Length: 231
Image (tube, rainbow, N blue to C red; front, side, top):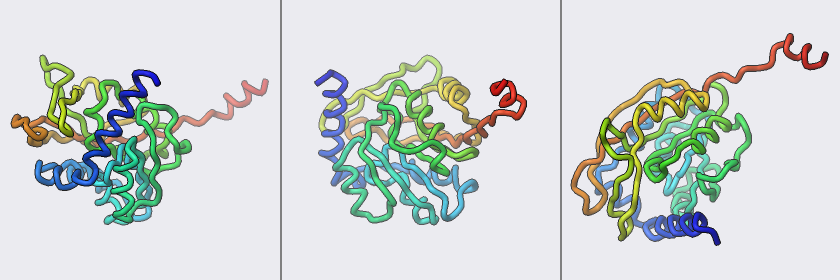
């Protein structure tokens, strides 16, 4: 087994160890990411829309969308997290998948919206998440997500106490996010800064930023272009 496979399995196992207590621990931490993301997206969603929860975990990030009448789909690397989510009974479908692996198990332009809550700080390179979300979303679909915000002069990585061990997480600056949006076909709609108490033994608040972005309309080939291709 490769080093990456070992790392992925270790991360999934850590998530599995905390699955049963995850919701309670996030409430104790004062985690309000799901409410922030829902608030940023509320003006753009309708009952009956579909939403893909990327890194759904126990479903905290998408439960409010279900209550608003959306059809929720989810994917996560941890089967045990998904078991907890499934028992809540509000999702249409759940899939086990590593978010760093392309392609994601959904067809192109198959989802109205997507969310990614409390996940991106685990990854240094976010291009796969953005590229695959862009592919899966329908034109004008909304994608809301949260990153650990990186200010000028601040390091990209930081350590927290997580599931009984020290875990490296990553910050992403506004400039990095804007570059990713441009590269993968998204327009920025809204953004909001907020903070959360540190993980477990870490007392320093973690500065976060939530974004709501829109999938640009795909450019269809023109009749002239089709004629040239046939010629």
